[in-house]
Image (tube, rainbow, N blue to C red):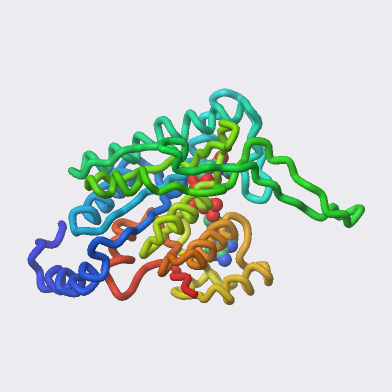
Length: 296
Ligand SMILES: Nc1ncnc2c1ncn2[C@@H]1O[C@H](COP(=O)(O)OP(=O)(O)O)[C@@H](O)[C@H]1O
Ligand SMILES: CC(=O)N[C@@H](CCC(=O)OP(=O)(O)O)C(=O)O
């Protein structure tokens, strides 16, 4: 049975949230919603209700979503093989069509619809709309273990944001509409690029000088070598963790994005478990945020 809403505990939580409601009044909060955090339809609907609540209490949420697992599912149906290098999907022309179709299509619309259904208008766009994300081809290098020579990796149409023009986001925010952004960008020459959603979220948070960047994933946050959650880390501690190797894999682009955003004026970046009900609300409106806060 659920607790009645007027229990002393519920009232204490509400009263305790007041200072935070003041702090985040009219503040921009960028939420990266990872494909792994989306899970079942109910998870998406719950996410939509939390984002709608943020809007209703005066926060300006901007959602940037991923969709890696959803792209994988479509590629499987189409019998197309996909490879990842340094956490990034190698994207040829055929793959790019699928990536854009899934990210800017059903995933984008499902997220926007979940927020709209919760009573707050949301509009799904991709980074190509309104010139939001100007992209360029991403180049990565690696050291060839045989020759010890630095070589360039060709990831195809994988891009990185060269610049972000937040005008279209400001217009939507000004009209009390929640922007929902798919991580696809366009180059000077009109070429479409597949952008890692963490990277896109960081660039957008930086361009908006957001108060907070929340990175929703499927782990509780950054875990130490004993798999315990680290509640707070400085940029220097994060760099040391990558160097030592206990921060690795998909966590690297996430923490690097947090550092990037902080260096561009975002006041705090948090990695948290998007599958936990109301994780966003607990993070913003209580003292004991459930994830890892990365600060300067
Ligand atoms: N120190 C660490 N703490 C937590 N997760 C880590 C750490 N190092 C590596 N990881 C990995 O990073 C993953 C999260 O990244 P990823 O799967 O790319 O998430 P998303 O799909 O949400 O973008 C975790 O599931 C975990 O396997
Ligand atoms: C270049 C690159 O790897 N792009 C990602 C974009 C989606 C994404 O980042 O989704 P998650 O946040 O769910 O991982 C991809 O193709 O899977």
